[in-house]
Image (cartoon, rainbow, N blue to C red):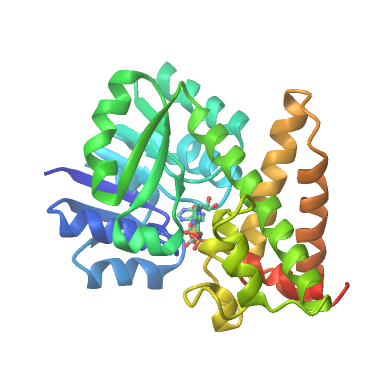
Amino acid sequence: MANIAFIGLGNMGLPMAKNLIENGHSVKGFDLVPSLVEKLCNIGGEAADSVSNCVEMAETVITMLPEGKHVEEVYSGSIFQSAKENALLIDCSTIDVETSRRVALKAKELGFEMVDAPVSGGTGGAEAGTLTFMVGGDNQTFEKSRPFLEVMGSNIVHTGGAGNGQAAKICNNMILGISMIAVSESFSMAEKLGLDAQTLFDITSSSSSQCWAMTSYLPVPGPVPTSPANRDYQPGFTAAMMAKDMRLAADAASSVGQKTDLASNALKLYQKYMELGGGSRDFSGIFTMISEGK
Ligand code: NAD
């Protein structure tokens, strides 16, 4: 069993750390929010009072932070100076490909083994230990990180070299962001045409338009009891997070000269929903803006 440092104990990080503890690992954690570090202690973890203190004895360092700037700051500002020489570094945050590759290159120059391993599956998947991990890095480091990822997830995919985990995550969420809007527009139009949501769902959920945004996360209350639409769009996955991922997609597209008309429009719509106050609601709440014709 390993000594693990876990940095970023938010909605995703804390339940991921919990699964590591429950599987016998020693987890020392740090977050800028002290109450989250306390929560880690309450479930059997140990508190650190800084990133340096968190990583200095760890064999494996896991980060779960909001954005690229946080990841770069934490690695370049502390981890690279304080981690043990042979520590394995696993960044599970969703960030831009460029920053991810820059940090991985720096890690390599300093002699660390590192993978980017962003996740899909949300807070439910983090709690259940059923996340999908998209892992970028060389074969050897992927295999070394696998036993830790298998404790937190059920689908571990090696996507290629450094930054390719982020590329996979960004492409996945670009489809999700667009498809949620497509489902919202369609179900809103159906309602106005006098077509019952359950009737449309019974058809579309087993027809050619079937997708996850519809069958697992339908933005209309009723047909999918577990979807956030049935709890007044409490997240889940916030609209602000989705807007962040659509921005990452826009940046990634422009870095390789890829035209993404639908994704560009989707980003504008999520930004508008945020301006209307929807940022902290579930991203499927965009249905309400669309159905109100805003
Ligand atoms: P969150 O905001 O709940 O947690 C992030 C934590 O990082 C916060 O507690 C914050 O205090 C901490 N933090 C920020 N800077 C720090 C620093 N310098 N040192 C220590 N701690 C620091 O976010 P989350 O929902 O847990 O998401 C984390 C990452 O996972 C994001 O990149 C997000 O895009 C990705 N993600 C989230 C979900 C989801 O459903 N929430 C799903 C898939 C992927």
